Length: 231
Length: 409
Image: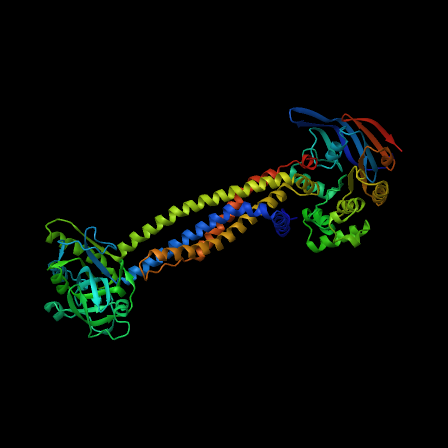
């Protein structure tokens, strides 16, 4: 890790507890982690290890039960729902394993959704959305519905949607999990390009092969970091 | 930055969700449709009734004060004998200053015959002043005169419809008809006037009061006395004066009612209001039930769309955005229910009015009147119900944890 790198995300003794039925789950158990700007970072771990929960904490989808989360130097661990929504909208772009596109909307409208919550005017929304749809090579598909697209294309739409509000961090949760290897490679190529363009990419995966694309990786087991690795 | 997302977008999503679940949306608004329809029907029939009453009261004549035997007032035409007399009528005429005219009537149902046509007709024995008091207009011939009353002449004046019925192809004036066993000469025909106080003027036969008293052996007896005040401001005084004079004449005994059009109007308005309030409350209950229907459907919708809500939150939707989304959906559903209810109510109002007409005496009119007010009130209430019942599901959706929602199975 370069000493001149700027810290983007700093997690200090992060704990996350869940209540599922009568069981208390200690999903994250004292996570200390720093992620720098413009880093390609991988979180690895087996199913149920807490890696997705960690991604959700990083993406402000949920607040830590204990500990401090500094994003760009500001403490976001105690922010209210409205402010967290703003942070998610402006700082993070999410890519999910199951694409999570809205089946009732076409490609253009799906990509526009984050801009609606960013209160961007309709004309500007369409301009920005078309721009990112072009970047993922789907301009000819903008009026198609998710059901009319292949898995790889759907994931590219999801990446366009993650990019549209120009976030500094892309969070990808098993982005290639539902794809064939060719489509998976294509998605990883796009994510690497995004990192090269200056964005921070954080990817959650259980696949070592996918994690090889990252500059740095951690392994999570039972909510704790077991291995930290630098490439 | 604006605090909420564009309403047009939320509206579009709400409209899409309703379209995408047509049957469920339709079923959810049924309660609302029937609630609003009941409200509109009730208000339109209530208003129709009020207008009908107003017409009736206007048709009674203007500045009218009516003296009737106790229990014989209102719209009852049954004569109650031995209570009012010609002398009462004379006393009132002489003692009260603010009146233009006084007329007593004595009524009876008598069989009228001409040739093969025979029918029981409502017959009023009265005085010349009655035409002025009740605003009766003679179309042909003349009304009753003082000599007619003095001589107990066998003459009659026919209401317009009775005239047409008994003389379909000939001129009635100068012809004779039989009332009971007695022959009467037709001397006048009234212009059409309609109904008032339960009496259809167009089907009434008017004869001199003395003649009818004589034929029925009720000499000197009067069924009702009509007084026409000089102005509407004076009717109150006339009512008071008539009451006092009759009390004195009867040495404090009651047994009579004195009332004016305003009192009648107040009474009828009160009845209409009670009717509207009673049925209106039922309609309100249906509307509330309609609201519960919408709430249930929205709760199901929230459960079905947990992942979508989670995704929208991940993409930056604030709890307020989600709240507005579901409240709008509820309001849109209830408004659709309200608008459909207004149309159904208009149809049912007319339908009910058409049924009611069949129960009215011939010539009776009853229309349902749908005022802009009743439409505005119904729609406003349905939107309010949508708002109220949409808040809980919307709040539930807004409070969903995005993380849990995204991983919801």
